[in-house]
Amino acid sequence: MHLIDLRSDTVTKPTPAMREAMARAEVGDDVYSEDPTVNRLEALAAEMLGLEAGLFMPSGSMTNQVALMLHLKRGQEVIAPRGAHIYEYEPGSLAVLSGGTIRIVDAPYGVPDPEAVRAAIHTSIHQAPTGLISLENTHNYAGGTVVPLEAQRAIQQVAQEAQLPIHLDGARFFNAVTALRTTPIELARGFRTVSICLSKGLGAPVGSILLMPQGYRAEAWRYRKLLGGGMRQAGVLAAAGIIALTEGPRQLERDHQMARTLAEGMLRLHLGVDMQAVQTNMVYAQIPQAPDFALRLRELGVLINPMSANRVRLVTHRDLRDEDIPLALDRIEQALQLA
Ligand code: TLP
Image (tube, rainbow, N blue to C red; front, side, top):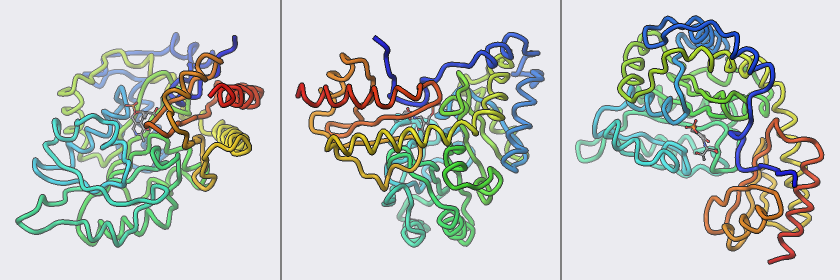
């Protein structure tokens, strides 16, 4: 049976061109900053986003956490949108690594109201002082939703007035660039640090990059080492990353189209899909006993992730064939009939 894997865009496998580049990659010891391919990838990413420096790391969790370590002093608070990955899916890392706490603000479709962010800023001696504001674009938990540029600018304005740095979790930065029909430079503008993942829709096997001002890089480099993220001859991974960064973004429009087709089909099957939230490559649906539904679907050859007791997530990506979407919908219909 042909398996259709909709659990995440992280399941994409390296393309033949990536494997070829990995085999040929020029390498050195990246812990000494001597890997020419890693250095090339970091410089390329920095140039594309218009930030001064980049640092290659194994995962988006690590790039986010190093950013939090850079910005927060122990006991300080980060303001983040409800459902933020740094809170929901980076398991206590903030508390362990930065000694910080988090203040969640409501964020319909991943977009916090700038005035709510302003109101959440703490300066009193009785409260954990705010050290950072963080946004997520696209916002995973809210549905792979896009934070519009004007909303980003308004929140950056609040950060600036309060003299606070602002971080972007851009695990799916290029999905947002694609959906907003903007440029990487425009989307990254105004953030002190930006984390981007190469291993999601862009298709690289491993890797994320933290973009930052040059003055932060030495400390970030030390934190990466502290976390065990020094990867030695990482050029074999960076070589795939360069292809992901240069060629991956143009594939994303297709992923978004597939998600729309999938969502429309699921609506026809009376699944609870909020079409307003289907903005990029994710489809969330409300369904009772979501884990059981996911198990039934697995037996029919479709892998999906139950994200809670009554919510499932389906993610489209470059490794899907066009015919996989109608086929997945047929199997979903069968799974519903088995209920
Ligand atoms: N998210 C994963 C799971 O952890 C949920 C996924 O399959 O979507 N920021 C955001 C917004 C993310 O969605 C993810 C991955 C990360 C950071 C962390 O990236 P990795 O998995 O490389 O640590």
